Image (cartoon, rainbow over all chains, first blue to last red; front, side, top):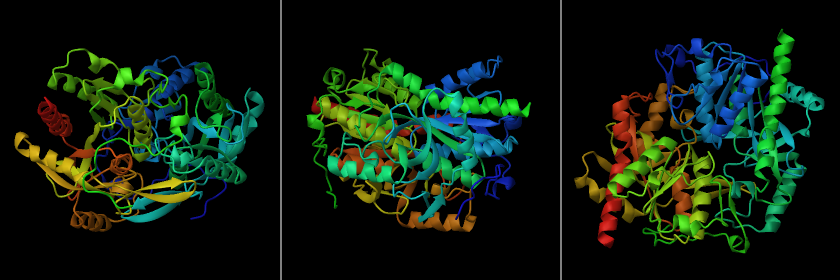
Length: 299
Length: 299
């Protein structure tokens, strides 16, 4: 069950039964193995994923601008259901994942199969999102160098055939370092830290302002201080599934989230709309710099 | 921790800290306590929730037709983010919940607070969706009379302040019986049965066609037969959170899902588009009959 420090890239699905399947309906993307997936998706080198559908469409437009791609692909949604949106702009495939691990699990399962069928074995994944920070100025960007579940363990918990299975959430440390090394090209604070993944936004993140709260403010602060002392820099809701699934598939991935508030101070998300829009774009700004540098070094 | 057979209706949030809060931002709905929530949401008697955004918009239009409401409210989205859509058509509030328990948890937390602030204490909730069936003809509708988690226990698992908490998933049996009693007015099969809630669509539901599969077809069939022998009629991804949250809040709710396939026969979802559209509407047809009968009995 132990991981490796640097994952040698190369998508590797562990389902030997798939090769015998003539067709495979990727039900939530509205695509199937019978579609000419290679024609549509070949050349995918980077996958950008985040929660919200409009943020994904916005990223697709930004990718087109940043990479000088003028074929209009940023407006063509390649998912044929309303569950997920998907745009391929040059080497970058942008897909949303919704809220929480089950939602991102469905998307990753079908996207990994899609990339395998399309012959895109070496894409690097980036989950970019928002999060609650611990001890950081709001607007700081955290690159996750570890991921803990709600039990504060570095595993994704799966229930398979009625049994509890723990999947390690190992992170590619080289990719973390490569992203941190871009710090000097970036005008906002970027730090590496451990991310805690919760299964809800309220009690799971020790908030006091959910529909239910059966603990005190002292209990909450003791828990957040405990997280802080463990090196946890932020809390969000998808990192455990993202890290464990990609590690299992032998795919490189990084989690890059901006912190919208300092949870050691309060619970409510109350920045201005202008701040939110600027901060939400920070993970993208860091990652697109990485992509541009990668593409330049290949030329 | 034990439940009651019939829940006396009446929303009851357990967070005493909320009353002291001057404002409360319902972040994922884009609304706040400072908005005149009573003006917008008062009179809500029924909440219809399901996964997909376009299905919700479609339901809103159907509710307007079925209840002869001609104010155009079915086209006015009341959520101000792209996370959830929400339409209030007469006494029916239609809201999507995305995929999986974390996604529905966020929505339910914010919606229960919204209804409390708007003075709507007695709304009845219906989760309507699609599911994989066990031993039923595809197109059958299951009204859940029990809900099991991935450990096959009738609890929602929450991790709060690092501790594992189990919340009972008690179902209002009277509401189940009231829905089943509508059978003779309905042209498709409706049964009561236990629902299993999984955290993903593939391994969590013992499918053989995910990106990963480390069990055999014999393991899968043994597990599904075990579920079947426990009385499990269908598998979906939100019922545990829905049932546990509403029971905790003292709110009546029912889970009504159509089965798209018989998992004892296969894994892939392969009905025709026309069948899918007709079957997807069956839970709605049952529930709108309940709503119409309820409204008629109040006049």
